[in-house]
Amino acid sequence: MLLGPIGVLGGTFDPIHYGHLQPALELLEALSLAEIRFIPCGIPAHRASPLVTAEQRLELVHLATASQPGFVVDDRELRRAGPSYMVDTLTSLRMDFNGTPLCLIIGTDVFQELHTWYRWRDLIELTHIVVMQRPGVFKPIPPLLEKFVAPRLTRDALELHQRISGSILFYPVTQLDISATQIRAMLACGQSPHHLLPEDTLACIRDRALYQSTYTYYHSKPC
Image (tube, rainbow, N blue to C red; front, side, top):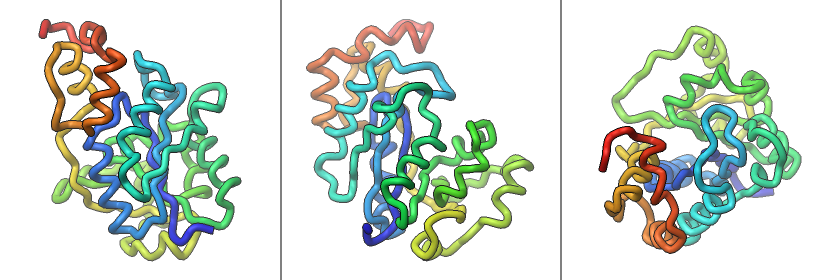
């Protein structure tokens, strides 16, 4: 058994950037997590499929996380057929880490849409939920989610260690003003997102000419 909860950070990572990495590092340290598992989405259930392959996105995540102890890349969603539902991913993780607390890490905007997820009420039986907040910014919780959160809300990070699931923690992190859409557009226009993602990741994107022809897909204005 690992010493501490496992953080679970899913996403398309299209591509991964410092806006993913910096908050993850803060949570790894602040919540004394044993590790954070970056789980690239295979087939997104809530958005259009990325224009680069899942295998290419997985490679970029490997490069971006390789130098940071405690960051682990998990490809289970790519190995599973069909849409990538988080409840299935957490069920699989629970089978692998039966007695270890899990902490699903999501941003505030994603949390606002949690009630639209497949079998969303079942998530809390499998994991804790850690909602990353921008310091000093509060967004009202939709009424349906508010009823769901109220009996499970905690302000004590130690609870994440004491039980394997069931708590919801809102935690302030540094949220950098970086988006994957912005990076894709810059790459398609021949601009350099040098300070927005790790150098090894950017080098791989350039070597494989990823995102160079995607600008018109995301935007209607010329570069």
